[in-house]
Image (cartoon, rainbow, N blue to C red; front, side, top):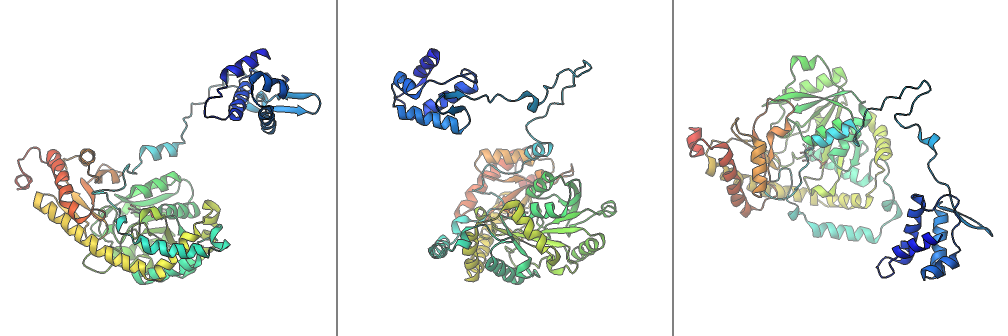
Amino acid sequence: MVILFDWLAAQLDKASGEPVYRQLLQLMQQAILTGQLAPGTKLPSSRLLAADLGIARNTVLHVYDQLSAEGYVLSTTGSGTYVADTRPDSAAVGPAPDTPTHDGRAVPEPSPRGDMSVRGQRLIDEAGVSARQWGAFMPGVPDVAEFPARTWSRLQARLWKSASPDLLTYAPGGGYRPLRRALSDYLRVARSVRCSPDQIIITTGIHQSIDLAVRMLADTGDRAWVEEPCYWGARSVLQASGIKLAPIPVDGEGLNPRESDLRHPPRMALVTPSHQYPLGMVMSLARRRTLLEYARQHKVWIIEDDYDSEFRYGSRPLASLQGLDDAGQVIYVGSLGKLLFPGLRVGYMVVPERLVGAFRTGVAELYREGQLMQQAVLAEFIMDGYLTTHVRRMRTLYGERRQLLIDAVTRHFGDALPVMGDETGLHFVLGLPEDCDDRVVTAASYDAGVIVRPLASYYFGKQQRKGLLTGYACVPHEDIAPAFATLANVIEEHAFRAASTPRERAA
Ligand SMILES: Cc1ncc(COP(=O)(O)O)c(C=O)c1O
């Protein structure tokens, strides 16, 4: 025991900012866990230990109480405090990997397993998320600086003043009813979606909506059609749920399944009909009708990802695929991330009527939703007309920025580099020559302070078009030309090394 006293005295640092109580507790826990204080050892009386260490007896009493509450020691009235025997029970832990069996042979070592699951490792290996989320020319990001924060905070302050308990608890499955009503009105008018408020399920965004749809409608090993190329986030969510992905080519009219694809109906198909991500084409009406008929006949679930089609320049936004679906095979998913700000994390899904009950239960079981206060603020924001006004204002602003960026491209490169998919959304694809490595250009422009994304990274197969996803929405007008000059320098260095000017090379 003298050794314990000496060790504790040497370790305690009364001058440190750490309270003596916490230091002593941690030291005694350490001594018990390492066996320095063996099971059954009787601890010194609190009076003796306090005197020896020169600390208050109450401190020691509190430490002993805490050790007893956490199971390190056992106190018996009258007979003192003893170290409890908490050594792992070897029978409960099981044999070591190479313990000999009854017939004397060694049990084979189990194959070494890393920390990650196979699908977890794949998620990490193929991760698409960017380290930076703001700045020229980050694709897919709206101008959050333009968000009417004062209006939002006024609505929020008013609601908090009369916060009722039902706004502060868990959400009922599906989300705040007035928000579902406001969204169904908005989607009917703005996106020609056919739905009642009951069919709307509020989520934290498209990622969660896809995750829920997959968990509710598909099993591990089921196949899903995805567009080739497609959004990395959708790919990650599907694969992490154990879904096998079948990439389907797209052409100027959108999804274009081959004969061989059609022969194997998938469990689900994930499409971006109003604005193919990332290339930007629109699925033609004929393709939409064919896909819906195929889905009806083969019981394929279609997930329609309608992430940014409100921002259509030059003509009105196009109607959704869901609005044409008479068979109830389409799950429509959308988000307020691009309309308002991505950090809001509010999205919605519109499910066919027969799935409403199941999805409401599913969303509550899996994600235990809340944030009703935020949903209430959003409902008022929409009902008071602020969403429509903001979207209209942003459409004009982004339209101007898009034009400024296209002008900058033309000034630098003439028509040597095509601009693709620029009619809708927050980004376009700047085509690069086929022999140019767009990943290398992306990395070099990142080092130069400009963010773009390589088109090649959205493909599964080797048949990849080269280009850069270039976002203009979040870049102030005056920053567009200088930022593009930086990007153009990098492109020239990598794409046009052989010819003296891009125009010469194009000629
Ligand atoms: C095609 C597509 N779908 C979905 C999302 C993400 O949606 P959310 O932020 O609502 O999860 C993005 C974001 O860039 C996207 O490009």
